[in-house]
Image (cartoon, rainbow, N blue to C red; front, side):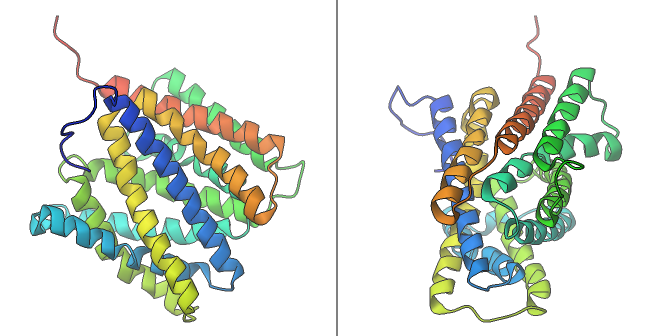
Length: 301
């Protein structure tokens, strides 16, 4: 699945595979969000949900170890994996908390800001230089955020603010993951993610701990597997397909979130959420594609 391309039908091009993987990722992530909202409404604290989200990623790691062997544990970046996992836990707990207070479509629209924060933090932290077109995209994307929240026109709720803060931390983590990916494989990164995040996520969960029911445990198990598999399918999408073709498929998350939010929770996204989400997504996609273009090796003439 995540190794060599192998034999495939001629019509199943790399780009088509990438589109399918990205659509799968969108469905998996929003489905996980539905489970989080359901469990929170069933009086399970978001911190407890976050712990089981990481803990039940273990079955996926077990499959990776079975397929690739314990060689995937070899790394010379163990401290970086630890730092990434700590930041990931903080961002995850904040996002899960914000998700319980925010309409599903709004939460997913605001989550598109993570690449915007990553680009901005790369300038501040790594002293990267970006062109004026990218600055324009950043401004356009954050204007989309203002369109969704509309400060000064409507009361700003706590949930969207927490999700934006979570996206800011996740933007920093994206930079760390990019650094890790230069020397470690995807199975290695995902394996250490689960190994480190499980005990780290347990610490805040213990302060609000309640034991899940058997039904809740079953949902948590499915959620943990779904969330971990989503990390793999996202990486696979970008590996086999061109980013210019694959990335637009990620917008399906907003459509899927709007549909499931209405179906399960009676939420109907307003026009500002859809417009703002489209602005943020367009900006983030442009920045990703711009980076791929700028870093692509030039063919000698």
